View 1 (tube, rainbow over the protein chains, first blue to last red):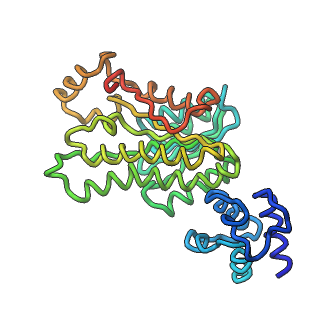
View 2 (cartoon, rainbow over the protein chains, first blue to last red):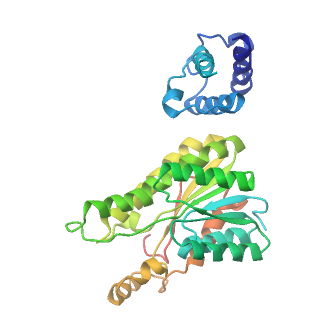
View 3 (tube, rainbow over the protein chains, first blue to last red):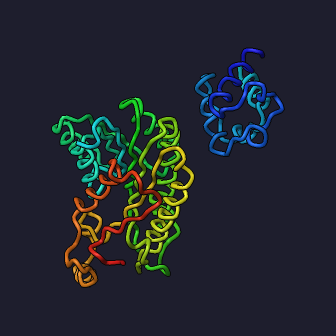
Length: 77
Length: 247
């Protein structure tokens, strides 16, 4: 769990230029972390690369918060 | 050589305008993937010509209206060249008929290849180009997509759709360093236009201020320009390359 959250956090920090302390499970990429729609698409692409998985368009649309991303990744591992 | 080291994918590149675009991009230094749907032998000839220039080239068979086929085509091109810098959406078909006589499948076939195909190919390359933070997408539309043309409701609707898609993709992708433009050819001498009756050709010629039909090379030159650094500050545009037919 910690490992996935750490890796996701690193990607979010790198991609969105936010502080690590802001990347909480309940934080919404768009509402809280300043991402636009295209940023979210790119984040999902990077998560796919990082975790070696494919996230379908339908599933990607459900990833709104940091916690959503972490849960999704864990559910497929 | 202004496209040295760049990787290009040209759809419908075995014949006509697409073939000439593939050759011109290679002349400018690009490695080129030559897509074809049915004409494998012709596509191989294009690849041989490009290799003779000292550039890499491969053929990729794909029906651009099929999303799975498009995804695997783009993957194989990236596997081969390691990047994908230029996409030219050129593949197109005609099924001409008067509106009142046009069958539903004639409509669907043309929309699926000429419009949906552009959407699918653009979507498929965007991932790679976004990662690269650079890319050039050039859509071959048609001047009739601007002017309309009797007997081509399906083709005109598809080409007008491509022009709208070009503008939207340009706006969505600009922030990632990807430009999207369209080239709208007028009457170009190819297998597709050779089928027209002589009287139709005569009538068209009268409407062309430059008083000649275009050559595929006329389109290839403008397309290559958009792919090079010279075209870097243009996006969302439709360039009319039609001898002045539609101003």
